Length: 382
Image (cartoon, rainbow, N blue to C red; front, side, top):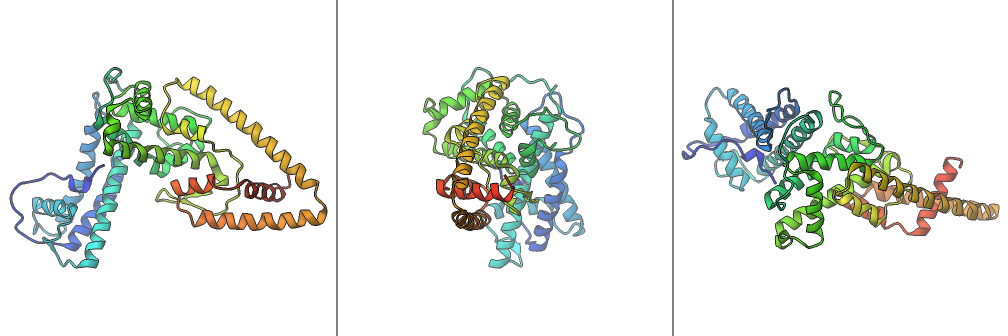
């Protein structure tokens, strides 16, 4: 979506000097740190656009470049370094001094990390401003067809947002993304997800319900954008990232105890949760609906109540079946349940967070589910 590290101001004169690799690594390190400050916004323009957020990302990178070059006493011209950064972005290392294959890999990794830091800084800036500045007046699009660039922009923002640790925590339990930002209070992960999606639609200039209807038409095949391979690949990535984020949040502490600083789920102590994740639930989370927030809330509450009743019936049936066994049979079943629990924990710890973990959860057969539930009931004294 964005290659922010190569987005620095470009001057057309030819590269005249080699740039040492330590200088470039120093720049990437300083840029990554500087980008953390992009989300600290004090004054927001009356006419807010995404370009304003982009300019702040670029300013942070230029500040990092200036600080880096200052350490070299003016021996390297900023435009020369910018040219080399552009070349690295397309795999050209001819003007990087002291470069070999291993060092190039280190350089590429540092650049990719900085690019990701820039994407995250952009997403944070957009979301934090939208959360804290609800009074901002904009003319949101309510009539035209959803265009290609806007759709890709929205999907890119959402994909990055779902990776942010503070957004993952917010989806999980409503934790404030920042202490100084107060947003609406929602009771379920699904409501919080819909809130984030609506904020992002507004940020790209679209009225959320209108955009939702347009997305629905796209997924039903009633849009010319269906023929655009890049657009559909991006939309599929968006739907996958949203589904994974919602599923992880819904599974709650039974699924992921701790969130690591890089936004991935670090499994510490996992117990099986009987939370039912159906295809209907997944579909409802894949894109914001065109209903109002109240309608969505009522529908979600109804769905959760049905799921809770189904889970309660299943638990009771499993409990009754277990209690009808002889003591010896119960002991054998408990041993099997412990083995199933241990095997499940090992699978979870060996499965990376994301789509693969969702597939794992959906692939558990009924007999294994029964054993996991029996282990949980006995472990908690139910």
